[in-house]
Image (cartoon, rainbow, N blue to C red):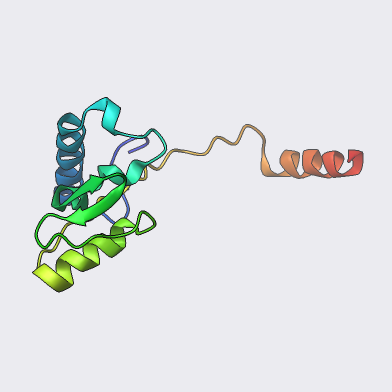
Length: 119
């Protein structure tokens, strides 16, 4: 399949379906004003267990505070170790596209050689 999803790496079909559903529900629950365009970590499902006050995340279960620098991996580890909560990771889908080769291999070698000679 040329442009299909059959070559998705690292994710089963069930996980991909869960991830897309999860992702869209997270987006629909967040207002656009609360999402920083450069901070995609807020889209992780782990954030449903944390609340931020003045950009400082704190656990909704035990109220432990974390510095702004902590990644979602740290927050996920906290949930798993302290509360026994395992949060699924979202995976980025990789689509395999056919690579276009407009020139034959010998023609491309000649073009590469000419380009290097020119440089």
